[in-house]
Length: 298
Image 1 (cartoon, rainbow, N blue to C red):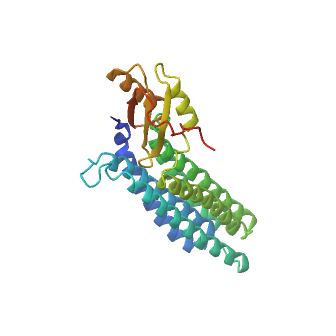
Image 2: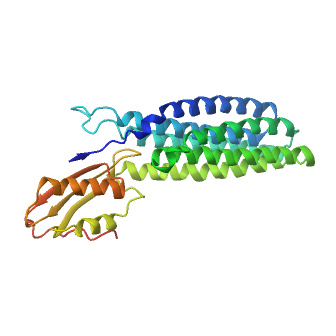
Image 3: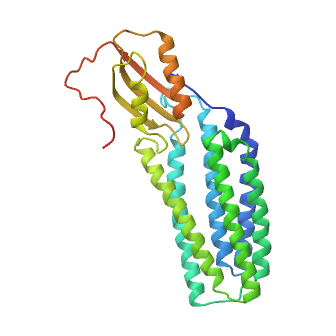
């Protein structure tokens, strides 16, 4: 069995801490001035930013939890708690999006004065905060999927906040108050799209689906192409957490093998597919004649 743990992400603990603190403060500011300015767009953007604060917390938690030692009761450690947290996050975000949408609809029916200047000022602050946070993860985003996810979330936030700023500018010069709730509903759609994807992927991972970034047919072909391997069966690939993937399989190697053979396979699986935990059972012959080898996904 191979146990690979990537410690590169741990170097970004400070970046996560700064990003979470800055964005939490900004969410509070945005909520306050969203009510003061009577802006649904600011409230919606606050909800969007809050969802990404949760995402940053989950990404950071995944790094921290991955370092916890397994115990006799939790032999894989507590990695799957990140999946549970991700599911809860998705449900909360969808519920919050519903409340934001309701507020926007109410403003369509009963339009009120909106301070375009205040909307622009608050959005400009958010643009600086989101862009700055994204740059904290820029370097690590090229080689670490967990860090890349954090970078993309904050970059998307910067784009949405820029839209709110432009909306405030349009309100200031046109006086059209419907722009604000309309922009709010657009942001709600963005929130729902990302939240539904998060919830869907979390449920799939929770029931041990093959991670979406891995093609199980390709992995089987890779194993079958290894010199000396005549059969692959009982191939299983599943997520141990939101960032770690495990594989177990039986390989039929009639001529036997050396320890280096197993080591080379697990290293290649890690390099090619980011599979961090590999369990290989090597057999000289396939004993169960009635068992049908893995045939690929239907």
